[in-house]
Image (cartoon, rainbow, N blue to C red; front, side, top):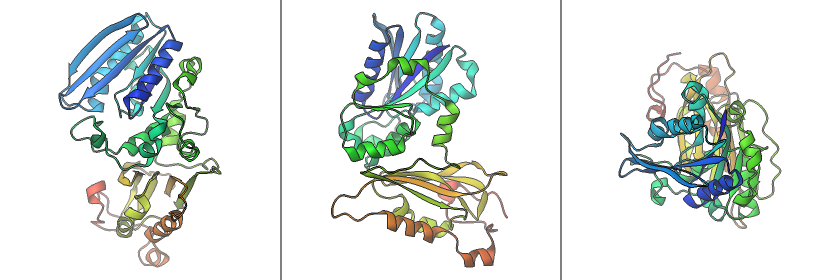
Length: 363
């Protein structure tokens, strides 16, 4: 099996720094870089090794977006390079703001599409000088010229936090503040190394294989069952909002700005009395929140559990955690509501249709 190291990020310079450093440390590897031009609906593929550029091709896409790029060229190219036999590894720089989980999930679900390829590591490369804005700011990708399609309305923080959470190693091009580094470490898995210089990447360790798909998917999953690592980290905080009860759909909507607003990252799951079978997924970063579905509860125990990471308030700023806890408490259904209606409600509408679609189950 030929190992591939996937590199992702939200800025070109850190991504390319990590890619070049790894390729220099692994002379028997081939590097492939993909870039998307959403205006021209094209994907540019560049393949090179230490001897120089092997190929460069511009591909017209039916729709210039990350899923199309992954399906139409990224995965097929990685499979082809693995089968070529000339190289002992691949360093793959994904398009800016492309998330590696999409590649990993395709390869895990359909190993026959790349039978000689294995994901060795997922590296997230970020700029330490802009880390606070990247992880907790309210910029949209298109405001930075980074959108991967005309319809891409994702926030920079949403993408950057997801990349950190999925990473096997995080590489920063500049030294961040202690508080920013503390917050990053709370987002990443506890065993994930963080380096502040691309030359410090342990190429030998990465190419040998550090990516474990199930462990990574468990960490980034909407539903978390086990305890989280301790978060006694000066400069940053982690807050857990947990209850066996569902959220009241109307009051939860009223409290969205408090729970999901502000310069912090939160994600998790919840359930609703109006939709008791649905796992509702929550994700927010940099003040932008999203709600969706992540499957069905089935026979598993329902839980409402949202984890949040933020930076300690600056002098003179209020601590947001008491207000967040209070808003979460107001969002839960009350004892009186449980006594009057139970935990499962027979309702045809709950106000969350724009996010979750129509209610498809009557209690």
